[in-house]
Image (tube, rainbow, N blue to C red; front, side):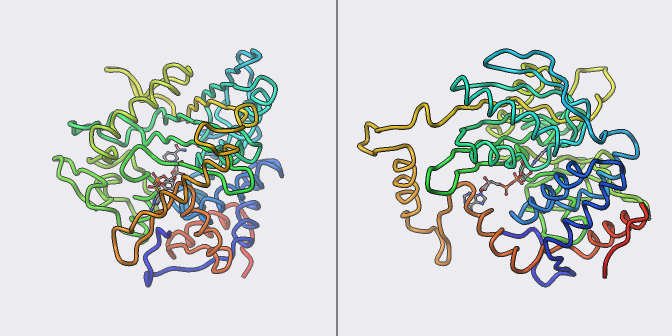
Length: 373
Ligand code: NAD
C-alpha cells in the first residue's frame, strides 16, 4: 500500500535516516529526548505502514504548531478523575504521540487489574495514527476500542449537507491474537483522511473521485477545494478551501462520524465540534477508549475452538478463502495491508513526494538542524 504514485517525483528515504532527522527536529523545537524520539518513531511508523497521511509529511505542521503554541512539548497528562475502572485525563495540548501513550498505559494497567477499563482523554495534541494505540494495547494482550474526535477541525460535510460540520474523526480497534498478528482496524470516518488530500496536493497518490465536494457540492478528486489556492511559500491549510471532505459510506459513515463526536466530544468531555453562533473551538483530539484484558475471557469457545486465538485464526482463514473479486486480487483482514507495507518499506525506504521531503529539509534548516547528505 502506498499513497505515493509509482513513477511520480518520488524520493526513497531510509527509515532510520528519517527517524534521526525527525528526532533532531523535535529536539530543536524543545521536546525532551524521549518525546522527540516517540514523535519521530510514530510519524515514520505511520509511513512504514503505508499511512503517509499521518507520517513525516506532518513534520513541518507539527513544528509550526509547537512554535505557535498549538501543541506544547513535554506535557504530562493531568488526572481529572481516577477511579478503579476508569480515568478522565487532560492532555493539556501536549504532543499526542506522548499524551496518547501516557493515556493508554493507564487504560492497560487498569484493565490488567480490573479486567475492563475506560479512559476519556481531553485536549490532546494530534494523536497521529490511532492504530498506534490499538497496537500498543494488543501487545499487552488487551483488546481496545478508540473513539476519536478532532475538535476545532471542520473538514467534512455531513451526509446530505454542503457545509463543514465534522472533523475526520477516526475509529480504531485492536484484537490481540496469541501466537499470531493482532487484528488492527484503524480508519478515518471521512472517505479519505485529510493528510491523504495533502499527500495528493504535494504530488502523491491521487484521491478517489468521491473524496471531496467542491463549493457547489459536486464530487471531486481534486484536493484544491479543501485548501484553496496556497500562496507561494506558505504551507497548505485545510481550513482555507471552499469545499469539504465527504464522510465515508454515505449516511452510515456520516453516522459513525457523529458517534465519534458523541463519545469523545460529549461523553468524554473534550467538547464536540461546536454550536451555532460560537467561534471555532481550539484544535485538539479527544479520545474515548475501552480496554478488555483478553486473558480474562480467553478459553474454550462454543464453536469447539480451544482459545480465542484459535477461533480468530480459523475465522481469518475462512474469510481469506473467499474467491477474489478480481483476477489478481486477494481478501485481506484488518491490519494485514499495513504489515505487508512495513515489511516492504523497511527494505526500500519510505517513499516521499519530493516536495514533502523538500518541506521537511526546509523545516530542519529553519531550526538550525543539519541534514546529513
Ligand atoms: P484507510 O482508508 O487506508 O483504511 C485503513 C483500514 O482499512 C485499516 O484497518 C486497514 O487494515 C484496512 N484495509 C486497508 N486496505 C484493506 C483491504 N484491501 N482489505 C481489507 N482491509 C483493508 O485509512 P484512512 O481511513 O485513510 O485512515 C488513515 C489513518 O489516519 C489512520 O491511521 C487513522 O487513525 C488516521 N487518522 C487520524 C486522525 C487524527 O485526528 N489523529 C484523523 C483521521 C485519521
